[in-house]
Length: 433
Image 1: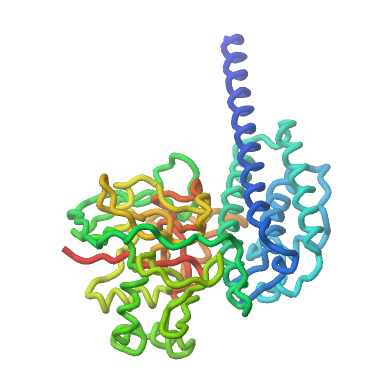
Image 2: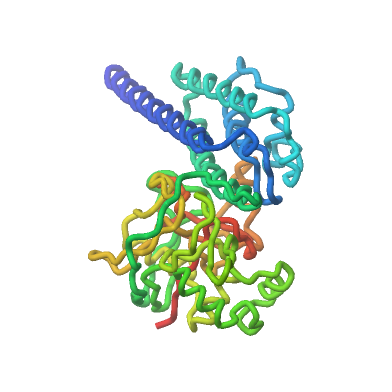
């Protein structure tokens, strides 16, 4: 029996060593990707905050580092010394459980610490965390789970770095480019078709295999009526017809709050669209270029998506309908790793009638962001990660052209207020059968 227990202990130790090696490798990779995203930027680009929802790139770099320092190193490594005593205040985002924080809308005023100091901060934390991991001093399922959460948290901020710098550059009259031009599409796009799904009693939510955020659980059964989903997202050309038909001036197409937003913010087209000498142009991460009518429309709010659907005689899908459809296709598409960083036209697929379910644009659903039946908010600071935002938000699904490819899945629930437009958000239509 003693020999058997010894053998089991060795197996457990070997498995733990493999798990730690995998976490170290993934940690290094994700941290490296974040810094690679900053390579095209000049120092001046790192510090600008163009609106309260946008954070400076420097802040993203520091905040993702603060996460590992605050939730892994400080509580678990007695010999670790924090890089700076005030960084906990400067780079906390919204975690009330770990103390006060600098005002979100004033992050752009933080000229200090410098960009160089923030990169030093990253190196300081990386060295300490990797050293302790490799020494086996950060073992234990709970702590390794926290590191895994931190890695996925950093991937969320990779996407935010790109969406935020696009907004920053759009506010500059020079309209600078972050990356080389994606060029015009070679494809004329794919025709829109409808894919039918029967009445069903199915499952919604994560099944427990692999990483997921707490808001994707618990998995539960849902009944759904028969519905049909559009084979691809709405295109720029299709949305332009809505504009030309007076869509932004017809109050009957809009929810009351949406109409107030149209009037108050003077919306007349998606964010980043501009009309020049009778032609439409759009700001991209490669600067201004003429609108491609076959690309998915993006940077529209929930209000605009809902108004377009009403005008088209359709509706937006529920998140249960979207997930039902998404589970019939592979998780593949135009993500951040493609380098395009811009939605691409749909290409007709010979194997599936549904295209662009993942990548290109986040797709608005009509579902309010709320807890699943049986959901219990985690205790402590991590309970603030998702649970406290389950009010006045709408769910988006599918990822976008700036989402890391290994970060998305069919059950992933993104959420934003209904008037948010600076994210790569688009429209896929649904209708009753």
